[in-house]
Image (cartoon, rainbow, N blue to C red):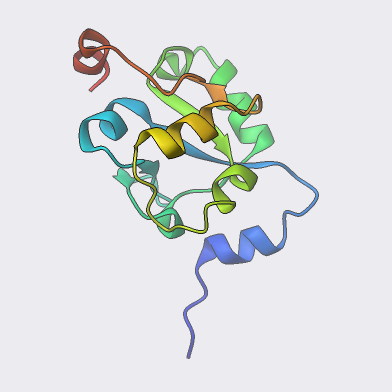
Length: 125
């Protein structure tokens, strides 16, 4: 019996909606691999197959709510799944080749530069 990952089901049924993965910028910089919001909202993971998929409405809500001040700072970025799927990787290293290609997309919400200085890393970690 094949395990149906909830994200696979969602991906197959959201063709008309924009979907995002959320990356934790300070953890990504520190660990040199993209750290995604886990689908059970129980931390951050490397493998996109275990990442939570956010629909556009959820992202708009999170980034605009005053209840979530961390969304208004540089700690997170929401990256459209269509950008991530192009790499055909389950784990994306945080190295120049990938960082430059990803951050050049205008559809990213939040920390579009995917960058923090050392003081900001300490503050947001």
